[in-house]
Length: 316
Image (tube, helix red, strand yellow):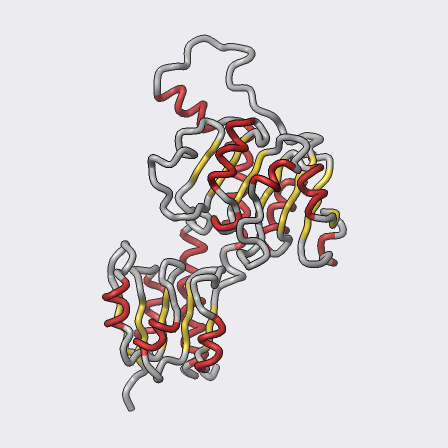
């Protein structure tokens, strides 16, 4: 009996690849760059499983190209907004992701952005590299500490909770959060409030929610006007939640004191985008899960998800 066919859309950690090659016929786009859409459409024909990343759009057109033998689309990511879930369900194609693996890495990076923005660390690094560091100056490059500050977290899932746990030892005044509903596990570390209260009370706002029809473009000119304390805004979730033109206006007008973005829309953000040159805006190239530990585990779990759907897991 022939082995099931699996297509991997990018060069990924070998741990997952090795699991799949034991029981499947594996084809791979062995490149660090995104696979061209036309090439992807051609290469998925007759495939039983697709191992993809967030850079591949899995829609009706691609599902048509794969054909009726496709049984599973496994994404090596937490988010699934690049996959047409309704279309997959209609066709009986299973969709899997890796939600439990990268939360700690994403929470770590969120904290890094908090420190980078509040303490103006990138400006300090640039000053050293550009020869601007002379004598010690008492008012030069002064940021703010987190002691006695109110921290707002939008989205209190694994990442949001992880951020709250990391913030607690900094001696913050309080941690408040907003989600679809109050979370039982949050009661000893954070307080549930309305979204408007997050905007009005927070000195630092961390966006840790999923991109949905309700959150797309949620942070815009109207939202920024409701912010009372000129907060620092951190987004490590999805770029589409923040309207970048409105963010630029808020940063230059002083409605927001600083911003730290690991995600943008579009990605990559053009190097000549107005936000890139702002000293009070730190932009990273989507590094939330960029740890060796996270990527290895994500690769393994994506492979295991495919094997489970194809009923190829070991009996023991």
